[in-house]
Length: 133
View 1 (spheres, one colour):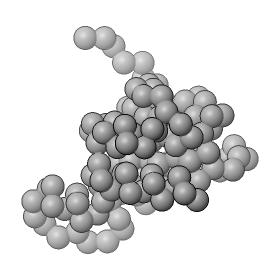
View 2 (cartoon, helix red, strand yellow):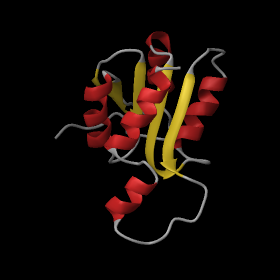
View 3 (tube, helix red, strand yellow):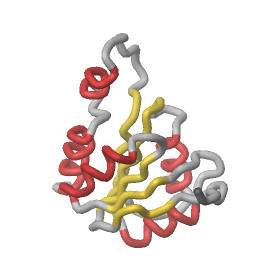
View 4 (cartoon, helix red, strand yellow):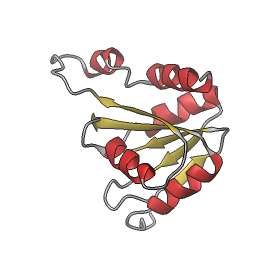
């Protein structure tokens, strides 16, 4: 075991122009999707403090970013990334994948993740749509 530096993410896969910033335990889905999309994957690890240096580094080599979290999109990690990027005066496409701002029925977790595209296939679909923009 190694100590984690507070507020620091790590690049776990290098790829092309698309970067997936994964918050929480969806990292395996992000990595599986990244293999098919040739995307960079960053395990952000922390929402607060947000690893702004990592985001700046990603902005230097990527123009398309997906944030991935199993949390509400509105007010979540993706929103924090959006707000920070807005201060950087750069052109980048961003797609936030997470829980929508609506009621989600109770049920089997995997079925619910499929319904809201919070799966490997959902990430692939979002990534492919961004890559053809």
